[in-house]
Length: 116
Length: 116
Image (cartoon, rainbow over all chains, first blue to last red; front, side):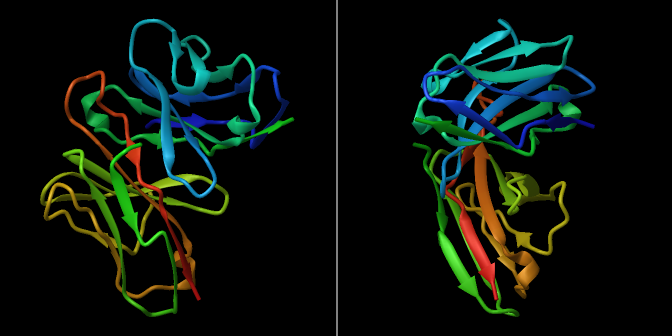
């Protein structure tokens, strides 16, 4: 079985400060990891993913995430947060094995509030 | 912006009514998904399809049904709506194709359903 945890329901950060949104996962095989963002009254938008290769993945809107296999984590980061980054962020995982199909398991979401 | 559409965006309906939530994508994706997003923000997979005439139940049990007669169309139907069906419903699609694009799910804007 695969699972993902986002331990923080909400993250508050001042504009211009670094932003980190935490995610840990559990899979039996190798993980495929994703971050999505949801703005109010909108669907989810893909931000970035880790499939293989470099542990540091760069994505849209200046976001990046670091895959850490030993800590089974995939934290999302942005060096300097903007007020417009305020949104709901979802981490997702799926096992790379074929038996898992293409079903993603999503974390519970973390609400990010960036204050001016 | 992804080419995946959901209608209606908002729906308020009385108990016992039959409703169909529409989802269409113009990207030629084989795989399509329905998620239910509860007020606590968590996403739950309720149905998915790997292609025409393929439908599967997701991780969360749902009284809704789906059909996939055409690649681009994946409607969700509730035969008799109840207040417990009040939620946000998100449709998504992904392609089978090159590994670097596999698994990226593109989401529609969602349908917010309220059953009174």
